[in-house]
View 1 (cartoon, rainbow, N blue to C red):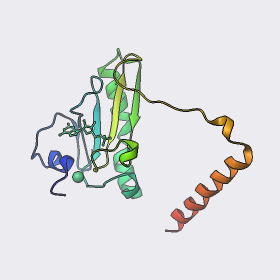
View 2: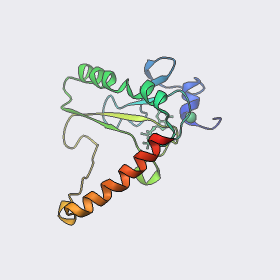
View 3: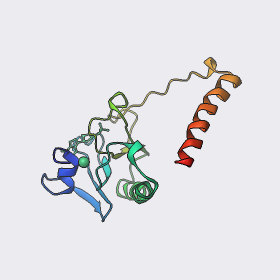
View 4: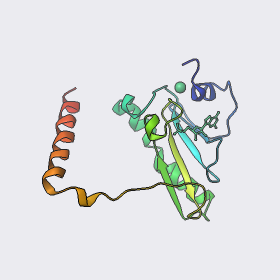
Length: 146
Ligand code: 5GP
Ligand code: ZN
């Protein structure tokens, strides 16, 4: 992918501050450093988003998540938490269309990172939740066939 910024980083065509690399993945500091230690994990293979992973690639990439999380915890013992995010689609705040996982160590409630989780539980009853689950289960069943 000639114009992909993360492919360019992987090929060493533009600089990055690397924290881990093997044949399958690269982890490097996010230039924005939302909080100190903000790290990105990317597959070396260009895949635009989560929908494009096959099981093998997912295993090779996502199996590194716990070790990077533990490394950040050890490197920044003052951090009180860690948010791990994978944005898919512009609406979901994806701006670079080479799939990546954010690791954002959390230091204080006003450290620069925010997530808002609306609680809409009062708008759902058992029947509507069951109907939602049925749609997902049916789609999953098709995934298993493919
Ligand atoms: P997204 O918004 O797609 O979830 O995250 C993309 C991330 O890539 C952003 O947090 C942004 O700061 C980071 N980023 C964009 N360009 C570069 C770059 O050239 N170098 C590094 N290290 N990070 C980048
Ligand atoms: Zn790419």
